[in-house]
Length: 324
Image (cartoon, rainbow, N blue to C red; front, side, top):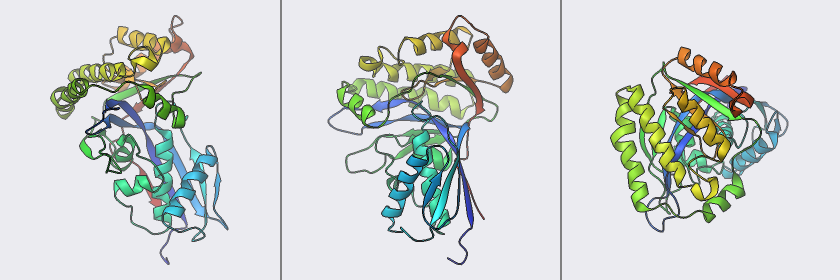
C-alpha cells in the first residue's frame, strides 16, 4: 500500500426513479424499471487518515453503518483507519436516492482508500447492502445517464442492466419538492410493498412496451417532445400500480395538484420520483427551466409556493472519484 492515497474525494449524482415494471408476481423478474441521474443535488464525501474509523457531517450515523458493512464485507477492520466526512448530501427519503448514493460513495471511496480496483456493480452494491430492489441507482452511480434495468430473479443479487443512454446536454430537469413531508423507506417501504396488490402481467408488459417502443427511441433521437410525452405516460401508468396506497398515480392530492399545475404551464414530461415527494419536470433548455421555476414560485394559488424548486442538468458520467 505504498501508493495508497492520503485523501479520497467522491461526488455522486442524485437518482430520479420514474417507476417500476413489476412487483408482487409469483414468477419472473421482479421490480425492474427506469430512472435517470441528475447533477444536483449531489453527495460529496472526503476520506482522510485517522487513528480509528470515524464519520462526521450530515448523515454521519448512516455513513458509519455503510462504512462498517464495507469493512466487514472485506474483513478490513483496523486496516488503514480513516475518517469519512460527509460534506454534502441531499435530503433523505424524498425520492432522490440519497441513501444508495451515500452507500455507494462510501464503498467506492473505501475501495480507492485501500488501493483496490472498484468491483463489478453487483459486488459494489452488496458490499454496503444496497440493490435489494431497484438497481437504477447502482448503475447510475457508475455510469450516469438514463438507466433501464430488467428486474431481479430470485437467484440474482442485482437486477441486470438492460439499457443505458446519454441525456442531451441542453435539457434541464426542474425538481419540485414540497418541504413538509417525506416518502417511504426501509421497513415502512417493505410493508408497503407487502400490502400492495401484485402488478398484473399485462400491466408489466404495457410498461415495458412503452419503454421499448417510445421512450428509448425518442431519447436515442434526442426527440424532446416524444421523450417528454412517453415519460409522462410511463410515470402515470407505473404510479397507478401504487393506487391502493397513494390514492392515484401520485402520492396524495398535493402532488397530484402540482403535477396538473406544471402540465398546465405547457410542460409535458412531468412525474413523481419514487415515492415522492420530489417531482421532476423536463425542459428543453436552461431558459425554459428558469421560466418554469419563476412561474411556480410566483404562483400563490398552489403548493408550489412553499416548495423547493431546483434546476439541474442530467448527469451522464456517474460519480467522480479523486484519490491523491
